[in-house]
Image 1 (cartoon, rainbow, N blue to C red):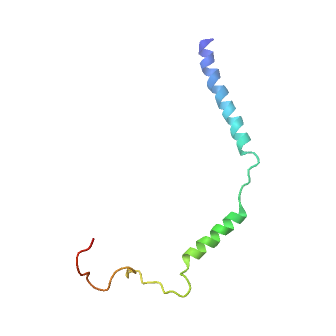
Image 2: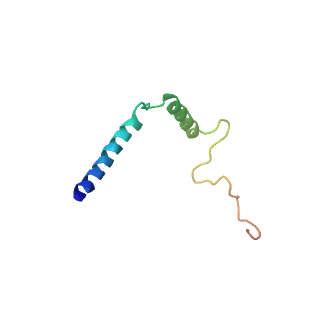
Image 3: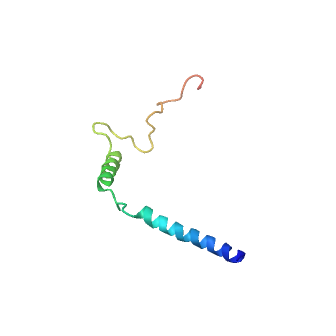
Amino acid sequence: MGALAWLVIPLLGICAAAVWARWAAHGKASGDGASLAGYERFRQAMQRPPSGRRTPPADEDEDSPEGPVAGSVP
């Protein structure tokens, strides 16, 4: 009987996990259209440059000075 108990307990655990997983997945919506549409608008807004400002060329660093820095740099 002892060896049979070692086999039955894991099988009962597997069955309980399968029942719980099926119950947990029941009734969930497959997608949220409004949220996805909002994310798409956000992504498109981040890809275009702000109106009225020029975008610096890729090799130009916006915060760098034109010449060498005088004095010590902290």
